Image 1 (cartoon, rainbow, N blue to C red):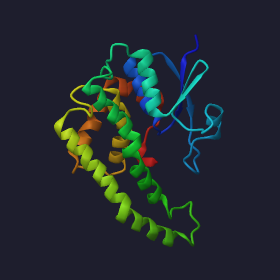
Image 2 (image 1 turned 180 degrees about the vertical axis):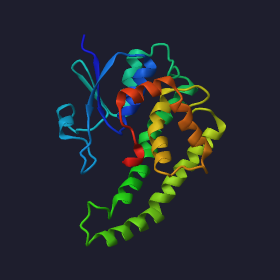
Image 3 (image 1 turned 90 degrees about the vertical axis):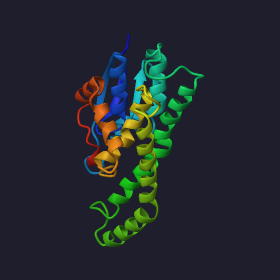
Image 4 (image 1 turned 135 degrees about the vertical axis):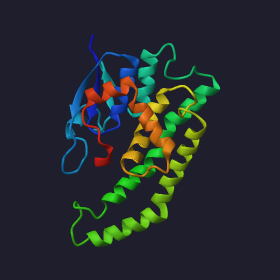
Length: 227
């Protein structure tokens, strides 16, 4: 039987997939890809797996599954019959879990990605004559839009974790795995500092899990501050 394969890109969302597989104690193999050192983007080789050439993507026999949330649901469908990492469908707890599963990429990540883009605007990749202008534009957009959006989401998350241990309640779920990437990225990039102690405590809790540590060992480099 062909083992499930995670097409894993260094410093990326696919680290979450490795972590979930370790929590599930599932059998899998890793195909590693390195980012282009000049652009930081995924290599063209990933397009042989999925037309968009992005990670995460998994292959399970002839089946190809992309997108973090879809992969998480697929893995739980096949490896979590006892609902260890998601509440039973039809319950209030399940609705909360599903909200956070989708919130991570649908709401939390867009402003964080915009923050990254505007931090780079006017950097070494830009024509040097344009850099001062691009930096002024970036500073204006960050001040008027991106910064307030990021702070609003981080304030919201800090408040949620003031009232509960994990995002979907008192039990750890796959929603916490999904939420790990935006929270770790915010902490690593200095957007969630000591003034948001609960987000930092969340990062410490997840990093203390044995499955998280095994996934880090197998997955290799994972430095979100370097993105």
